[in-house]
Length: 486
Ligand SMILES: [Zn+2]
Image (cartoon, rainbow, N blue to C red; front, side):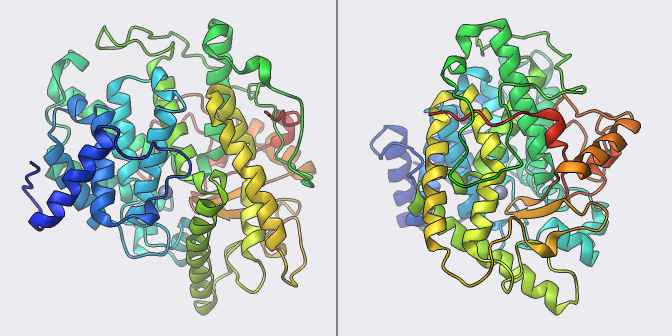
């Protein structure tokens, strides 16, 4: 019997939630796959579904809370999501579902402790709370109150962190983490867990896309070196095979570590885990936290790698939100954010551009988690579908002309639901990379320790995080062509 303390639902709704909770918990619902679509379900079903996933993963036990407490927390988290086309509670529910899928069917849980999983699931649920439907670039260009509050850094993500902290406090979610997980008392346990949740949420800012990708490669490399048997896909990687006609400049060798400082110096390993009896596969605490951020990012940008029917539905919502922002920028006399001008770009263009951008990340993910190859197959299939739909009269540029920047004429900026990412090539990349080296920079090999406007990490170079919604990377310096997995 579910009993709420802070919220009121009708007895009928509570019954529906409980029924679905038990169905999910006891395996009487269809299995979670990439086909699962929260958009097909009513809210009561979604609440019960989420509760089932949390309890199946033991999040309630790890945190020392009851299913009723979790449901109460979910309802308030839902209320903290705004009325936007895409960044809604349903997006959060979808991300939680895919995180669950990655942890279970795709076996990522073997690398994590129960408390890591609990932090990841909480972060997934809350990661876009307060999102206005207008991205960081819009906030900064307009110098909104939010942009000022968070000093232009990961503006929306920092807002979500603050909301999440308040929600966790209100529901006392982190106050009773069982002692055996750590031996340092409740206060320290709460602090550690909160740090992890905040770190994972900030990591959803698209500026960290390439950092996640580099770290994923690094973790895979380290695991392969230490224990070749623990990473089974290394022998199955085939050489380059790009999706149909893509002349992609984001091709990467997912077996090759990033150069210049991305080596994992904190390579101590902690295979026994803090609780002494759980034995995640050979990852130290920093790498476990990084992996949580990677899984979170993979779930957050998962729309494009889902089967066509699901991918199209989410894309429709993304496009609504993008064009709404573009319209608002035009009305305000601001430059229109790349991919958001309805007069210049179409849905298939946006979707294909985004798919090509994130493909190397999912190739790297499939090396660490071989079942994740299904995402690559889905991506190839949806790409074909998008090309079939491209029947408009707009020319087909590699990237929208409006996104070209004066300082780096060969670079372009691509907007995605999680922000805007900057892709550079050729001479621009060389120039940028030299500047980064002059600044004595390297790509941070540790989890994102400091964030938002509060205390930028000294280990993350200024050029890398100077603007919260840009990510600049020297692709040509770091990678060789894409190995495709079949
Ligand atoms: Zn999101």
